[in-house]
Each structure stands twice: as C-alpha cells, then as structure tokens.
Image 1 (tube, rainbow, N blue to C red):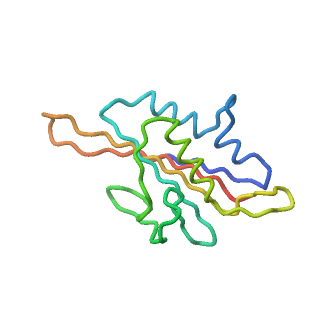
Image 2: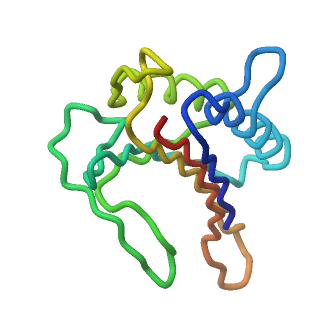
Image 3: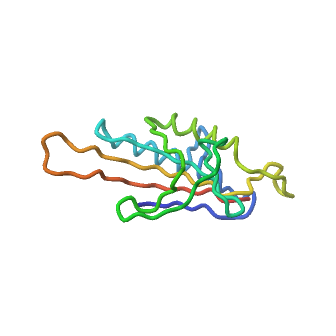
Length: 153
C-alpha cells in the first residue's frame, strides 16, 4: 500500500504537484507510467475516483448515481470504498481521461484566491491485480493500492 497526500493552502500547488503539466508530469502520471512499464498481461489495473465533501462520498466515475458509498475495511482487500465504480484501465491515457471526466463533477466554489477552487477532497485509488498462472500451485490474487488525494483549496 502507498499513499500520497497533498496538503496546503489555496494556490500552493497541490493540484500541480499531483497532476503536473504536459512538460513536467506530476506524481500521478509518473507513478502510472512506472506502473504500466513494470506490469505485463497477467496484471489488471482498476481505478476508483471519489470526492469527499461535507462528510459525503460521491463517485466521480458515476456522477449521476444515487450515493450509496461507504468506506469499509476487509482483511483481504484492505481499505476500500464499497459502492464506488471500479473501472479497468490499460494505460495512462485511460486514467487521465477518467480523471478529466471526474473532475468535471467535482464540487467547486470561488474563493478570494481562486475563482474555481475545489471545496472537496478527491481520492484516486489504483488497484493492481495479478492473475494466477495456469498449472501453478494454489495462488491468490494480489493487490497493490496507490492512493492519492488532492485536498480542498
């Protein structure tokens, strides 16, 4: 498990640190590039993207869905968001497209420092699953979770 948490005042560069730009990629694209460069066809990558605002959880990958989402913990899965859409992704561009679509549904509000400041916390969770090999001894599904949070402001 890994977690990257961006915290700071409005305008301090949280979003830029996480996403970067075309010429200077941030933590998310660099991590995703390294992940896809390392895995093979025996692996699947799934993502969830949620928003936490006023203690309510919203699925940014299914913005019209009725909220029935809850944070749960399972000894096998670890911490996960029950009810959130989990999408299989196969490339950095898949992830970036889903993040852009989700960002259009984030809660925003003007502040003194930023006209469209997000007023919520966005959590991206990536889950890597390794499929068992045929003819191998009993195997398990392995999962790696990388969580990044862009905080309000």
